[in-house]
Length: 211
Image (cartoon, rainbow, N blue to C red; front, top):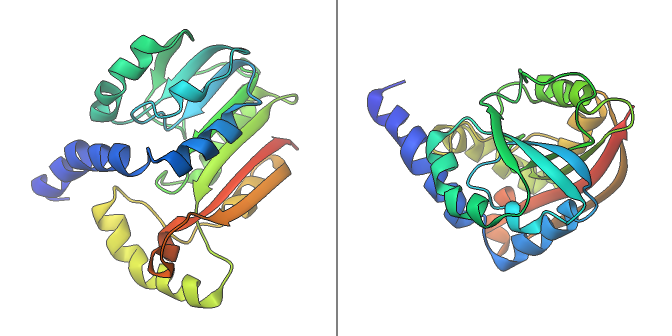
């Protein structure tokens, strides 16, 4: 990786993600995925803290996993306003320095697209939340229509290069089900907007229990 691309990934991409994922429509979906959370939560891909305002009162603490120092700095004001104790506990969702069965639930939003091995991360989260835990997820990914899928495959190499390794063609529910979880509830939808944006705007919102 060239120095310029590394600087882009480390300093520009987190700011672009923060700006692009804080719309009213996405906020309503964040509210929906966060509302059932309770107890001690591990959040994979904490980013700039866009979920913080949606943590319900039943959440007692959040263990944040975030690889980007820029993203963590961008979250400072949101963390300061939160009544929920927040601690950055690691950089890599694939390898969590957390004890087995130490959390009640896990949260991941717009992050499984970029983790190099999302299956490994999902299995790690399964270990940390234990047999009674739940995984709450909100992710973009593989669309159901063949024509949109073709466009996703066409654009994915460029997307990965300019968006920090983001994939467009990951089948999120299938990934979840294949790595230690059973999906209990699932909503899938496109964000509002012109059809040209559909390769980027097909979302899966759901809750899975440990299988």
